[in-house]
Image 1 (cartoon, helix red, strand yellow):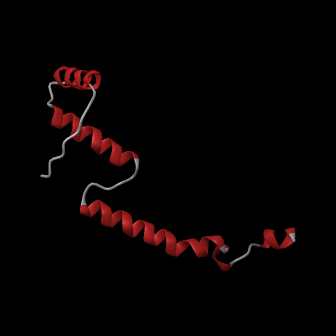
Image 2 (cartoon, helix red, strand yellow):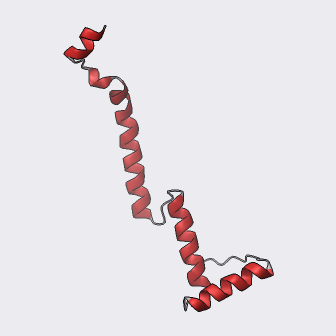
Image 3 (tube, helix red, strand yellow):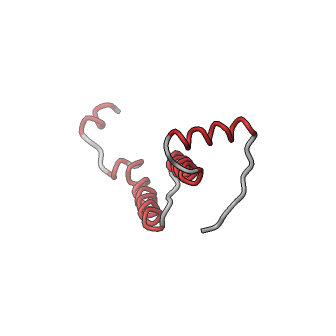
Length: 83
């Protein structure tokens, strides 16, 4: 697992340390939870399976978009009366 170094101001570090102790977690567990929430917020997948499923859904939506905009090529009788 790759490691990265981050820096916090003293107040933030003390608040995170207290939170970790209150929840009986270590800093890594807090960081894992925080980054998972951030990725979820922006709709970014965290594993290959989810990324592939998301890609298939987006591709399907783009393929169907022209049909939806054109109304599927059919007009109802109600729409003909409005013109």
